[in-house]
Length: 150
Image (cartoon, rainbow, N blue to C red; front, side, top):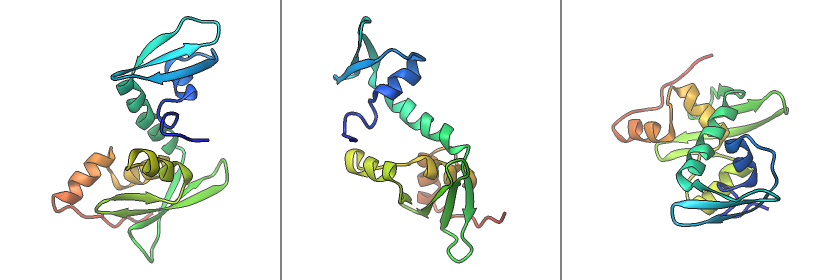
């Protein structure tokens, strides 16, 4: 079950960030750090900022394997397909952000009040943006969604 704590501060994230397979017993979120307690190992502190950066970078990395197709009947809608897992999601690009129908995006909205899933990052890359912040800034300054073919 996804909670506000384990969405960003998860045992899987700890293992990826530290390149370890040690079992994580618990993660305590403190002011600027998290205490990570391992089974049979010494606990360590990890920066909350490092978790947040990893949260974004992990999704961007996963986005690279996805295929994006712009819908001809609705140029601000994109089909994002994962060929390996044989599924696809619709992502809608608007001036206020990207909206996806996937569970990760909805969990981010629920617990973080904003979000960008791997499908959203795939669309951002397709549109030529390196981050959601750059996308929002471009649209906020009179930018527009450019029509793509391909």
